[in-house]
Image 1 (cartoon, rainbow, N blue to C red):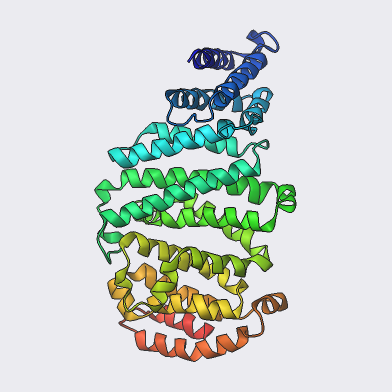
Image 2 (cartoon, rainbow, N blue to C red):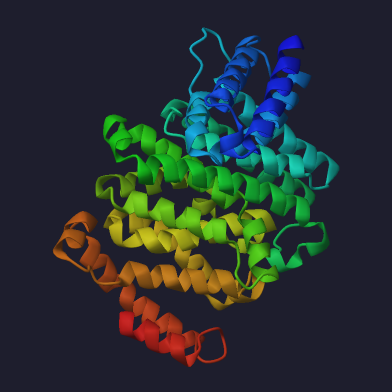
Length: 407
């Protein structure tokens, strides 16, 4: 505990120096204090390979959560954040500071789920983790481990919602009075996922070229499925706030932009996503969409919206085997009544995206030789469907014009 005490003491010194006018601090003093703080933090992390579930972990993270924003406020001290984000070189270490902060964040999330009350500690820990993940010094391996841990947490959240919720209810049936902890957890996960996507999928093209494509896609799938698992919370935010959930939109935009620029991998990724989520294929063949829980229905809705953007890049076989059956399940009047208009409209948007003509010859080549045949086969069926649904079974006059223009 002596090292932790020294860390807290030096952290206080750094905060005091950072708050003073630069002309009143002796040259190099703040820099030396920040370097000492980083060195102590790293030594505390490396002291015990089983650092999780230790009181020192919370104290270390709390100190870093206060000091790191101060370091980031001064250009001359920002390099120390990079040092803090570096992976540990100690054999048998626990992932360095990034690893410890990740485990502490998961502990914070577990406390929120257990108590049902929101804590500022999780928000501060998530902010610290995001800062470290955006550092140029953080390794892709560290980021990959973080995303895997966040994905496992999101899946646990989804399963817990299924255990606690009823069957066949849409998001409107949730008790909004108890939504704050769920929303807090979702926002924490989304912000951390955004930091990874921004750092490795947008800013660092050089890293992308060096890494195996399969590793990048694996992280992408973990990230995107994390977003899907907490989609019930983002939907609730959309209902409560006119602006919706901004971080959700940013994450989706980053994810779609990356994967659609890698034409060869889109089809493979979609097939793997269906394999990871058997409920998608199950719904496409199930007798009733009411067999899904409310939380799982929100996950399906997320993938309906995602697939709308990916459909132009998919091969005909994948569209016919996986995507179209999922869309048709929610495109009928029964789904509109039993699940909700949001699912109904997303399904129609997906089917229209499937039937959209290729924008360029490159799109036609990437879709494969069966793409045109699939569109020609689907168009008459879809035209008959929207005509049957017009005007009082879900399809309005404006939607009818859009549908017939596409079909």
